[in-house]
Amino acid sequence: MASNVFDVLNNRACRGLALGALALMLGTGVAQASTLEVSNARLSLLPGNTPGAGYFELANSGEETVTLVGAESPAFESVEMHVSSEHEGMAHMHAIESLDIAPGERIEFAPKGHHLMFMRRIEALSEGDKAEVVLEFSDEQRLPVTFDVVSPASL
Ligand SMILES: [Cu+2]
Image 1 (cartoon, helix red, strand yellow):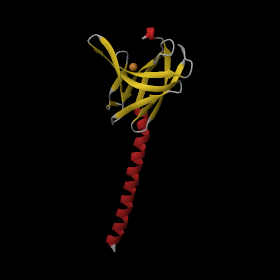
Image 2: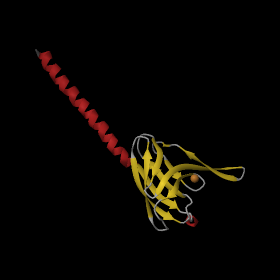
Image 3: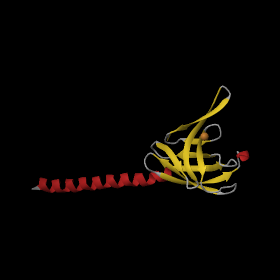
Image 4: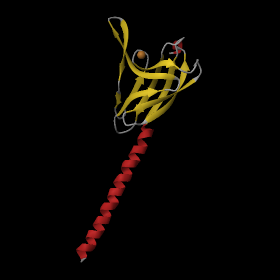
């Protein structure tokens, strides 16, 4: 009889642990959103309908690697992730599909390095305006960021 009582207690304890673990997992998922921080977001605008370039810093204070897979903005038809490089004195850039940011890492999107390329403007933008951009991550996380529209000369 006594062992039956223990079984019941154990089962309750197990269920309690399982629920606790579940709550912990959900809690971690929610906290994840606040482990990414973007600063110094600027969108450099060239005259006419040439693509704009986006620069920013992104810090991951979480405990897991996050993967940036793209961005979108209502002000542009599409946004690409690019890397600039120099080869035999010539500047080149190519598109990349994703970029990992390790725990504790801070990456910089900057001239001559990684940048966002804003293709085909939909809305009129000029210096001093704000552009709304959403950074997209492989875990479905979406991070809204407001970019300051600046002139290339200010960079
Ligand atoms: Cu580019």
